[in-house]
Amino acid sequence: MKSCRVFLVDDQAMFRQGLTRLLRDVEEIEVVGQASGGEEALRQTQDLRPDVVVIDADLLTSDETAFIDALRSESPEVKIVVLTAWDEDGEALAVGRMGVHGYVARSDPAARLIQSVLGTMDRNSAISQTAMHHLADGSVGGRTNDHRPIRSHGLSQREREVLRMVAAGADNQKIAEALNVSESTVRSHLHSVHSKLGLESRVQIALYALQQGIYP
Image (cartoon, rainbow, N blue to C red):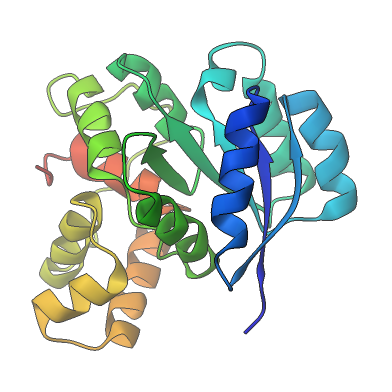
């Protein structure tokens, strides 16, 4: 099995080192580099070509948000997982709208981060429930101010069920078990949801569910 190449971005060296040791114990993951900020990370990721970048949300409260835009522009194939300890729901919502692929709270178990990192490779990155609560609380009246045009037509009842379970934090295996279908069927439904709604990640699906009142 091909290793998932991961790059870490956090301004605390001790935390980066701890994450590096944690992820290097996972057979399917290879930590290829680390940086203390977005500018440094952008230079290195251009050379190292990681599959996934894990970035501390605290760096996204400033001009470092430009890192996300630059990374998506220069390396659109790279997946982005955000680690957050924020208590401000509006800030969580803003990050959710950046098009990131995973969103995990620092208070979550380590297994959740590992699952999110590996899951980005096949759009199966389950959303942390702690992080999802931040997104839900930040959505005023079930709606957000996202500038992306929302197309609410075209979803089947089963696709809405899958969408709701994604927003609830379920991965493909759990969705398949709950609906008594195969994981390939779940992936097919998710592909259809992504295509019909013009969304790129499970985080965006979760935001859509909030906007449309499908979740909670």
